[in-house]
Length: 444
Ligand code: FCB
Image 1 (cartoon, rainbow, N blue to C red):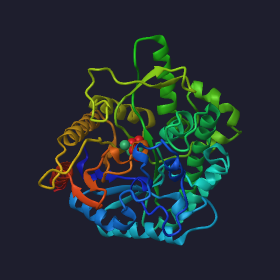
Image 2: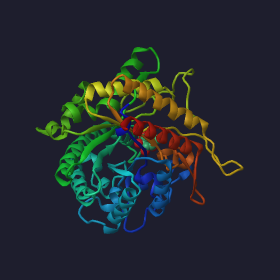
Image 3: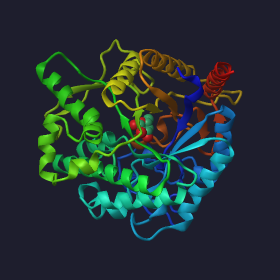
Image 4: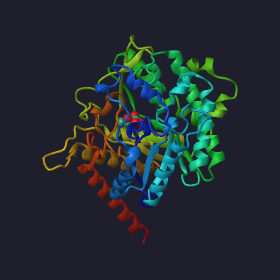
């Protein structure tokens, strides 16, 4: 591992932590609207307050500083800076991210800015959202605004977080905002998000000198739930959507074969060249393999299955397979030939404050340790991995699961908003310090 250039970080996203949903002119996002729909989110939770990071960001940066992280990935809430998604700019919203970026830089933490972590302005969804081809232009304009505003201080930009997840869940499976189960909507959204990515890359290159740009993809092996032919076919098709729908057109200018036929009606001449723009790195979010089965009740004919009984799982049932992480890193390295940054990896656990006011989370420490070791095996095998970011800095709003799942290195006591670093936060700080020490020894 090239210790001296390796980046250790933590990740969050705007809707999951900021709160202040109706403050300083922020507009509604599709997730605000989705949370208001009965039965969508566990316990009827919302992002209205979340971790109140909007007001507590200095405290949160101090926590990162204590941990010794070198970088922080956050996202800008599009409806905070453009309440209607386009035209009228909200200066108060822009000023919040000025304060955040300046405080990060003062703490010696590199800001990694993601333009889109799923909180589309509701006003744009009212105009068709990602189903509308116009969305590519709306997004490029937003990228230009953000690039021009922060590009003097921020150089690391991600266009989208997990486009495969928010399109599949939001338009195919009905599990995320805007909650549709509609093949046509899904295929339109996939293509328009790809066009938006390409337009944003161009906008950021134009706006920011020395920008380092990528997209963040969730990539996992997609395994059939049984040896039945139908399940094996299902897993293959699922993999096209999950692993192929975005990286393939973005890096090579073409969709995987079966998907290409579905997308064709929404494609126009020149589109693939607009999508396939040079980027600087591959952002990887990785948790665990997907198990897939044929499912005639699903609009795509396939869906998730539970993992086999003998696979170890996290408390929320996600399989723990560090070798799959190593294999994924090696596969990405060989296929896409750009540096890889792991921008999310981590686990939820049933954390609670004990009588001494501390939080012990041995399961998270064991998980992160095993995955970091797997990453080191991939690096030893030649994969060019340049950074690793834990999901997440704080416990936060975990989409459809609301606040019932805790992914943080830092515990959030929601009634008081008190932050309590868990045992894993201290463990991660030690890991970073050890690597830093061995890096400085390498240099001298
Ligand atoms: C990823 C999302 C992130 C978080 C983690 C647990 O799919 O990007 O927002 O929810 O899962």
